[in-house]
Length: 310
Image (cartoon, rainbow, N blue to C red; front, side, top):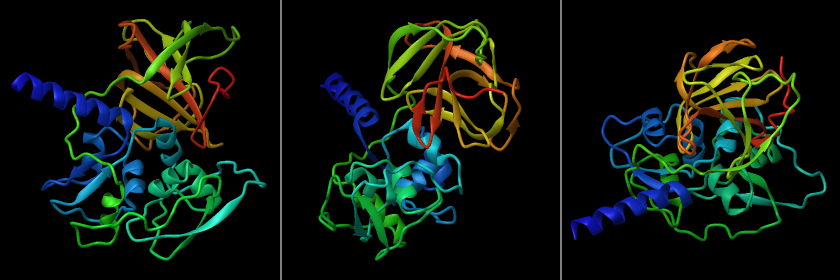
């Protein structure tokens, strides 16, 4: 019986990591930052999913939505304070949505089949935006949804904290330290001999699944070098990708170095081209040294082989 219960809990944890949002119950001493770290997502994702500002104070017993990990959205939201420039077709049909109690940008986007960066761009909002009841938003009308169809309750006194109950099908669990690897390998690909990579002479393998990028082979503990100068926007363990850092160029591209063994920079640092960012980790799929490398523009992946270098 104990074995069955244990296997059930493991299965629930796996499903929570793989297939959607979960609910976290705030404990004494918790902060948004500590919760984001504990659940291996970015602070920006956590704030957006719960319509919280940097000044909101959490209380023990409060319910917080832990959004499904999406490294593309994480990259887009990491450029804090900047307006999204995600491209929306000028001919795309839109409609008006009036914000209801408990709504979040994350929830509205998800229900309407949109990405958060697209919703922000459509409404000329920056990444720190907090919405209010009665506010009118533009949404893509390709997939309509009804307003106020889910009743909202709250265990916390502030209106922003009530947003955690807006997910209809959530499971209250504590997440484990490890998450399933969502990557799958495609074929080995080639690139121009003069193309600069974060590691020397890597074997380049396409990465598929929920993400699009490349897996780069490396030597054991090989240095990982910055291929385009920019500001370090995030450093931490990200669910399913191990130790991760984002570097944002002045043009807004996010260069994601993931699966690192160690990191030598911190958030806010300015990394010049060729700077030592850390070391390659061990790829859990092959068991050999390497990193997964991705480049994002407004949360959408672009081919790392053709992304600008300097």
